[in-house]
Length: 429
Picture 1 (cartoon, rainbow, N blue to C red):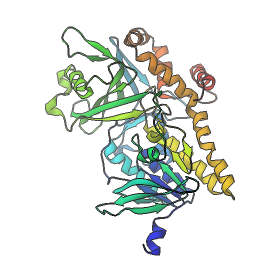
Picture 2 (tube, one colour):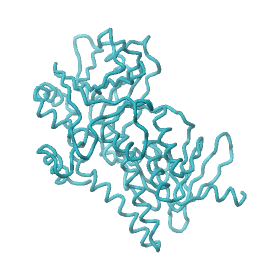
Picture 3 (cartoon, rainbow, N blue to C red):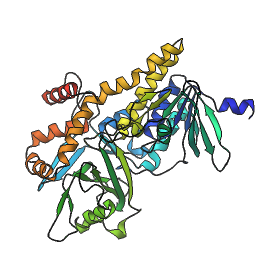
Picture 4 (cartoon, rainbow, N blue to C red):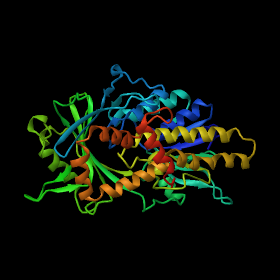
C-alpha cells in the first residue's frame, strides 16, 4: 500500500455505519476539527425499515445539525398524535415546550439517511460507500481496537482502516460489537417492526396515527388482542406508511407471522383508505428494535456504541432515530474532549465517562420503559389501559409526554415534574 493510501485510510476516529447515529457522530466530530472516516456498507440512496415518522425530539436534532426541514425540501410536518383504541379516537397535539419544537416531521428513510451523511461530509467527514466492514483490528498486547478490515465495492482483497477510536453505528446486528465480545442482553426488551406503503387518499394527514389495539382476527369468532401497536403515517407523496410494532414480552411474539398479521389488520380497514394488496407500492419488510440499553458496556477498549448498536430504542414507543442522533452527539462530545487530553490515561478517563452520561441521560427513563413493556405484554392490562385510559384526555396528555419523552427539564408543568421525578428515582441500569 502506498503512503498516500495509508494516510487516506487513517484518521482520528472511524465511524462504522452511516445511519442516523453514525452520520450524526461523524458530523459533530468533523465540525470540531477531528479527522473522521465514515464507512457505510451500502450505497445511497438505500431503504431502511422504519415508520418514517419523526417526533419533536428527532426534529430538534435535525435543526441542530443545520438540516433544511422546510416543506420545499421535501419534509411533511405533523401537529401531533391521533390515538385510536377502545372505541375512542383521541387527537393530541405535541406539547408546547421550551426544550422541543411543537411539530414533528415525516420523510422516507430512503433519502433521510443520505441527507445526514451529506451533512457529515459537508462538515469534513470522509465517506466511503459500499465499504463492508469485517473484523476489528486489535492491539495484541492490550486488546484495544485500532482499526477495521473492510472490503471496498467489488474488491475481494480486504483493506485496512486505522484510528485510535472506533464508533460502532452498525445497527442492531452490529457485527463489530459482537467481534469485540459485546453480546445482547437477553433481559432487555426487544421489538419487531413490519411495514409497507400503500397508495392512499390519507397520504397528507397532518397527525401521526397510532392504533393501541392490534387485533389478530385470523380465527373467525376468536379475535386476539396482541401486544404492540399499529401505525398509519401519511407520507405526503400519495402514499401512507402502514405498519405495526410488537414486543417480545408477549407469549405470541415468536409464534405469529407478523407480516400476515399486518395484512389481516389492513384488511379490516375502511375500503376507501386503500390499504389493499393492489395498492401496495412495495413489499412488507421487517426489522428488529433493540431497546433499553440491550448491549453494554457502551464503551470498551477504544470502541463506543451509538444508536441501535447500543440498544438505544425507546421501550415506550419504539422510537429510535432521536436516540440514535442524541447518542451520536454525546459520543462525539466525549471523543472531542478525550482527544484534547495530553496522556493516554487522561484520554481513557474521559472516554470512560460515556456510558455514565448515557445512563444519567436515559437510564431511569428506560427502566420505567422496561416496566411498562412488561405490563402491556399482558393482554388483560393492555385491554384495560385502552378501554379506561383513552376516555381521560388529561391522562392521555400525560401519557403522550411520557411515551414520547417530551418534557422540559426545568420550569415545566406538573406533568413534566412528575415524569422527570420518576425518571430520576428509577434505577439507571
